Image 1: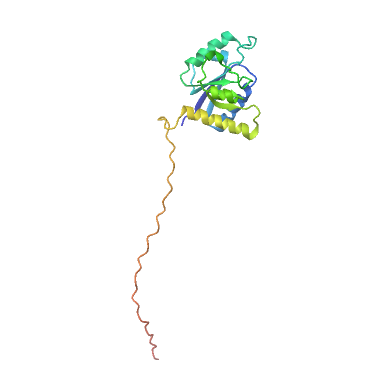
Image 2: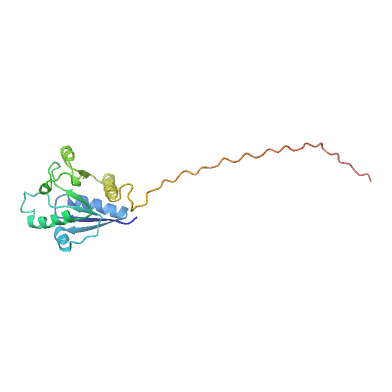
Length: 196
C-alpha cells in the first residue's frame, strides 16, 4: 500500500500544537507523510499531491487583529477546490463555538478541540482533540486519527487496495488409522542341540 499523504494547511491559534503533536506521532508510527504549510505558503504553491487536506484558520472570525480576512478568503479557495478528502481543524477554544461560521456547512468533516456534546450533535465531528490528554491517552488519540484518515482514504472494499485476507486455520488431518494386520501365530520352534 502506498504512503498516506496528508497536507496540513494552517494559520495560527491557541490549540494548533495539539494537532501538530498528533500528526508527528502518526508520521513516526505509520507510513504517513504530512506536509505542513502556512496559509500564505499554500496560496503561493496552489498545486498539491495529497490524499487528505486538513485545513485550519484562526477560529475567531470576529477578531480582525488576528483573523486576516483577505488571506483566509484566498486560502478558502484552496480548501474548496481540493479534490481529495477535506477535513476542517476547528481549534476554537470554546468547545461549542463554530470556528468556520463562514462556510455555513455543518456536514464538512471536522477535527474539533474539546467539543461539547451539543457541538457534536450539530456538526460532523470525526475526531476530537482533548487538550488535557497526555502520555498513553495522547498516543491513543493520535492512532485513532491515523485510523480515521486511513479509513477515509481507503474505505473497506476500496479497489485500489488489496483486501486483507484472513488466514484460514490450517486443518490438520487426523492420522489415517493403520491397518491392523493379523499375524499368523506360529508355535515356537524347538531349538535342537547338536550333539558333539
